[in-house]
Image (cartoon, rainbow, N blue to C red; front, side, top):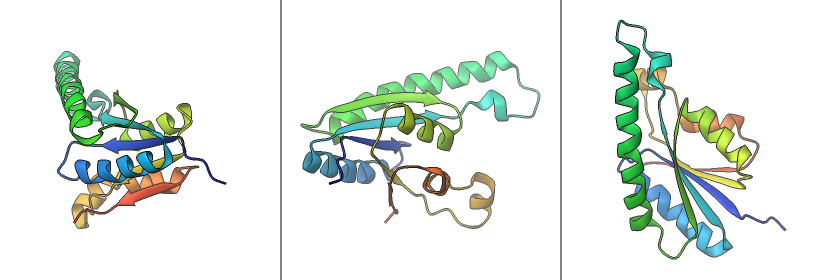
Length: 146
């Protein structure tokens, strides 16, 4: 029998995040599993190709991380009642960080949302969920917006 003890729930604090959390919460309650909620802040100084000081970029990233850590605490309190939860804010490339976290923390299932991007947005930003689904060695439950 398949045993699910650790569920990873990557979020982005969008309006979709509570919906995704409700699926992770219900699965965790039913399986007596722990939920790992993560938010990944992009590591901007690797991606920007224009003349901006590294200290300005790092200051902005640090502010994003601080804000995300505060948001994480309230998000967990609001969305995960009576469930064992671990919240963490990471930096890097989102899909890579999700996959690395899943492997390092022995996650059994990833529950994540899709944004349903289309057209130019999809070309420019790609799909984090698609990258995770294609590369994950564990099952991924993707929740569509709506």
